[in-house]
Length: 365
Image (cartoon, rainbow, N blue to C red; front, side):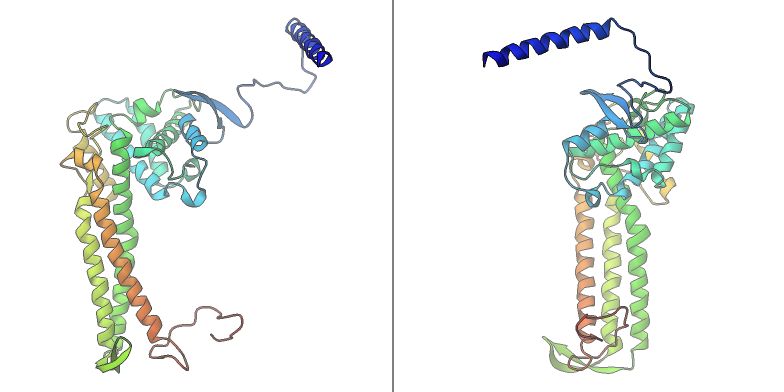
């Protein structure tokens, strides 16, 4: 024990002497060797948030707050990242805000750079710079700041500045000007939902409606037996049966469209709690109008920002409509699968297309 203590003391003394010697000696690197600062490596740059400095990959546009979120929420994976549709919607919103802020006095040079960077986000050109998962603190603050940092750094790059410097484009003061996570995230969700409904869901449902309608016409003269609880009932035509499916899809389209007017109402301009603190008069209306112009959809500013920030009833309503659509699709799919059962010992009323090999043990199954 005593010898161990003496060894530790002797080692500490030697270490202190070595440190003094190094401090008083000038060293030159060997030929061909380049020393870099410990604050910057070939892989990282140093950025800071209110909690301190963090290493940020040099090839990424996001900053310290995004990195800190990845440290705090080490859960999920690529499949649980913030949906890219929401990120693209943020790009649309940030462009709209920059254009309106430009009208209210934001330096045109900065505003134009923000617009260009936001367009790249909306176009999906910067998808690799949004690593955050859906698991994060409330209000989507981290994702909002992820977008702000990416747009800020990309705008800085456009203007010839240094990534991470927050100069001349600051993520909060310029990209997030007149905004809060509390109003931007609900707005982005509404934009994303509306675009997905109009660009993906409704066209898909309409295509299904038209295909089923064509089959209903094709099958109008084919007589079959109707069934209740799988038991034989009375005759009808196969076209009439498919006509029921056509009507289900028609109602599905109508249900979704009925929910959309509330989705078109945007929270932007409510800022932190719905009062519109730190915004100019007319900011909310102009942002909504700009988003409408950019998307071709009838977005308007929400008539009551307190409801728009504090509740998501509009999204719940749309979710309910989508749930009904899903139930309808399941019913139609199960019916067609049942009617196509067989071919030898099932109903065999429909011949379903062969799209891939069947069972590995039962050829042709």
